[in-house]
Amino acid sequence: MATAAGIETVICSGARHGVLARVLAGEREGTLFARRGGRYSSFKLWLRYSKPSRGTIAVDAGAARALRDGGTSLLPVGILEVSGEFAEGDAVDIVHAGALIGKGICNYAADDLRRAAGHQTGEVRTILPQASVEAIHRDYFVLA
Image (cartoon, rainbow, N blue to C red; front, side, top):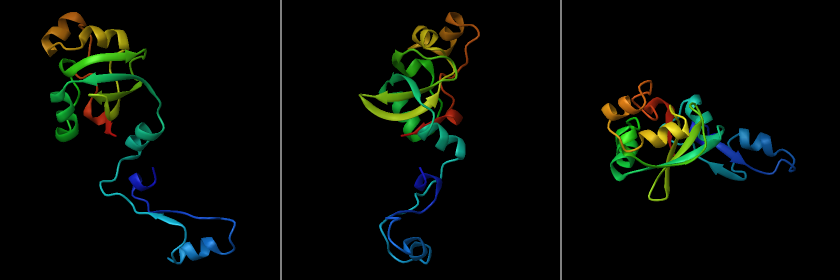
């Protein structure tokens, strides 16, 4: 979590005398974890590491590619299966072919998403007139 926030991190024994002073002086102690490039916002760090997932959404190859490479929102048309029971606003894991792609905050309750899954936006509006266009908005999604 710290390295994803852009913080270089050292894990070492606090029982050894003077270890913290040596680490702060830049001496080699313990194991160093370099900061990662592409720093996440505090919101996305919270979503990725702290907000528990309440369900799982399996997506097709096109949706997986769009989420991984395009930074797009997840639309109901790309959803193959919805597992678990969750409410609108809960975090869910997004998977493709059994592999975790990321986590997002869902705009639908599980039962509504099951009804909308696989449908084009126009059809979703007929099935669920008050529904959001996106199942998960890109601003509320973080890659695994």
